[in-house]
Image (cartoon, rainbow, N blue to C red; front, side, top):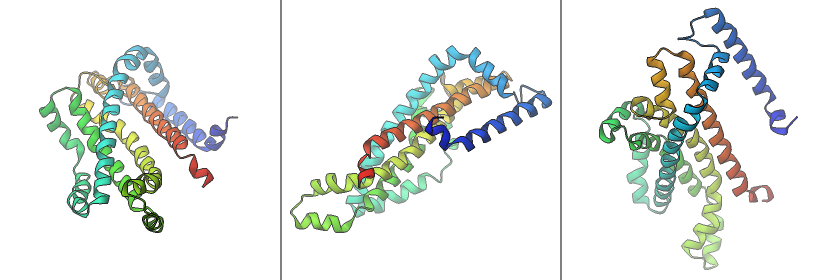
Length: 251
């Protein structure tokens, strides 16, 4: 048995048990437009394979990638700025915290009004959801830098740039990747919310369209793909973290 399967065999068994219970319960209930069976969802996924994989999945992935890249650039930049400037920290940190108290789903229709059904209304929703974990985790990482090491390098004549690159960046990377792993899973939710409320393509849009047709299996099929997409992105970030932070194993 492969090592990953050995590590997660309890989770796999639990999922299989839950799917079996779902299959039995849905068969007894027998109202597919409300609760389709997992086997019916799988059949629908195979039936809609082309349109889901080659039309709507790329549209959702595009929203996620653009939203995440913008969140990373602005989130990391703001975290670095707040770490270097007390004025910036006092100004922006409360706003970053307050932004998470606003229900994003309530703002999404406003973005649809501002940007129409273009990709940007969905990208803005994704940014608002993913910006917070990246910014806060990076900021915490920068704050966790060892003061003793920093002072030692200063006495040795190191410049601010050298201290930033050789001390702060390595110590912040684990925090950054922790925030990024949360952000990639949230990005799927953000993209789906945006597509639900206004879009011409995407897995969230397709799920809403199937709901208007009372096609229960059609509603679940894109949701399953959204879940697979989220898991795939999480594993991608985890692999990137493993490659980037190889030095941690030897430290």
